[in-house]
Length: 250
Image (cartoon, rainbow, N blue to C red; front, side):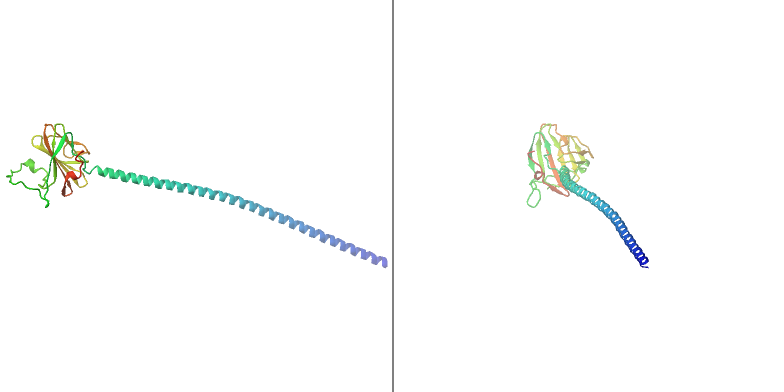
């Protein structure tokens, strides 16, 4: 009986030992499996981290590229703004220069000439009348076609030599040519901006009605050794003194 009891005890000890070993093996197996799963998770996290870093690096590069592009665009905008300002200034200067071409302000003659008379206006704005009134002759049909100039309209009359020329004092259109070389011509220019100029003298008319002329274009060519030439200027409805706007020494 004692021997049988001892065998039982040994069997139980063996069973317990086996159970302990199995439990230990199970624990080790679970631990190994957990470690593997943890390593997989760590590897996945590392992969995600690397991907995020790469993405962040790429985004940082894109941001830097965008910043550089914005800086370049800012420079281009500044350059375009300066260029636009320059172009605007140039355009305004060109417009002023173009507008100035239609303002009659140059000397109306080329060649030898001298000012012999300027219409004198009284303080009341009326031309001084001569002491003796001359009886006016009836106007001819040709004279009626001429532009009517008030007696008190300021003017400038010149003495010119042969081969002198009356010239357009600004760009414009010829709206009237009346007269002939014997009776004298009246040439009227419309400058399209409210200014009208009138040229009267004995000579050869070199323009016709509706001609477009430029500043300095020859209107009348004087043939005789001694000629008289009269110049008027009107702005809208008011006749103005031409000597106040032209360079009389030009």
